[in-house]
Image 1: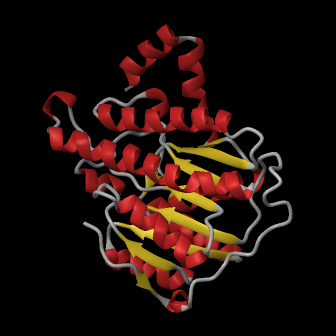
Image 2: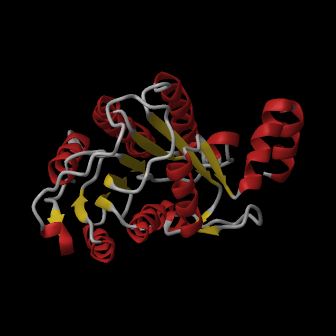
Length: 282
């Protein structure tokens, strides 16, 4: 359910216009985004989103707007990052439009969107409740697409900007017991690819950051702990580093850790072999 936006720390200042960069509006080739301007991070209450917010704040120059579903935790992250907090469940009707309007009204323009909001569900698909199916797609896919659709035209108009989509290795290879979550993350990867082609020559880029297993409260919230031996969980800060690499270097796709891109390549090059290995090792 949507909550009233909160202004904390320096966030209590009046809305500011992010400084324009040289070349804005001239449609340069999409490249890395330089620090500065407005940045909106979703899923920032904890985990990857919170780590990304801290990384952006540490680099300096950004006017940050953070969104998350947990008002108390979001407020804590906003305090330490000098950000504006907008607690809201993006699956609610019209929530993404209210968030986009708040971000634009508060910081003038959004040069960077990091779409990190997401939820999971683990268990056999045959027993998955319909409401859980809807929620996984609403939060992971539909809310993200709607928010990108609202902010992307303004980035194209200003001739610069970057969208970073937080995906998952589950969307690349599919994971047993996570059929709907895998499908949702696969949809985000395909979306990023398709939009990237449309953005060619506009000066706006879209990145797909693909973590494997991250040490966050994600697994506690889905109700089933992580029990596999590989890949081993990595700190959320490592994913934040990958996001920063994507932003500053204009990377299209970054896997965390890097070796996890191999299973997807094996799946593409030798699908029968991949399926035999996946059936054996899970």
